[in-house]
Image (cartoon, rainbow, N blue to C red; front, top):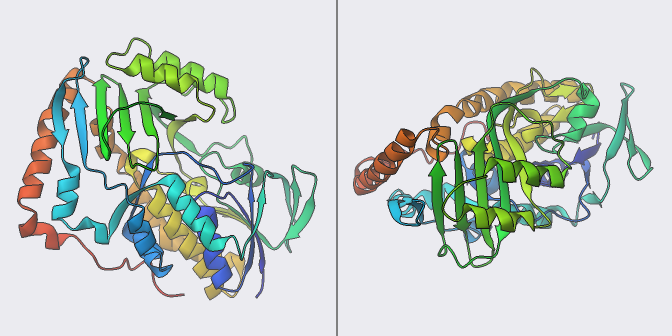
Length: 400
């Protein structure tokens, strides 16, 4: 196979997924991951839409269903911990029979599943990272942080919103980030609350705390979200600075927020990032291509990141097979096929943010009154309209 040696940066979701399909199509993928081992932690993610179709083509849908969080409800509370609203989304999912095409799982569980499917056939380089890339037109010379030098035919960046490959290939001085005005932090915490499959939600104008216990296999997760008008000067590997920003953003908040923030200050692994999108005119340059969040992060507020990661991995690998390794043809076809889906997903930010983080007390009040009624109404009438939900495989997920 032409251009058979392919280096993939990132062992999260998109990286192992593209390696799986590249291997199926006769290529030889290698994955490099900066972490010393497979990353754990993170929050719940949705496997749905074309992403679910990809998982079914991998014959992994039963395993993904078995990993379901079986999330049941949001319980909105006031500053004294009194329940002010309940959104029984689990009942709605059951009424719509959504588990056939939409499953919520923990990111760490899906990552482990994809790793287990690839580790015997894919070379994994943990604890290393790409230091330099040199594309001479015929192949790419790669220098790793460990000092090792190797030559690959193609390089794929599947290394997330803060992509190292994107910086190396397109230049660090070129920013493709569209900051959306929020910061998010997630920490695993020890607490007896809430009950399984439940999220407690406390909101104040422009900030909120979600306390979520997904399954009996996982610790409770404290999820912090707050507005910040200007993006702050903070790198991705500055944990002390991350905790400082979190403490400042949640200062003076009611309910159990002070205790949860204090617990977050003591964790060794705090997920922290700005809420942003990545928007690029092109996802490839020469022999280097990007996929998933590295190319077009939609932000977690859209709930689309996982399905786009899985879909982009499938299409990129498939187009390389179809083009018999001709990377220029394959990269162009990959972008043409996927860009409409990406652009539609990125537009969804406007509908979800007001629900997750209302900016006014009126917005909080309206969410707490209207959202439960809407969920109850949809559940009660599900039998009359659930057939409108498409269960047909996406036309994007054809055969390669």
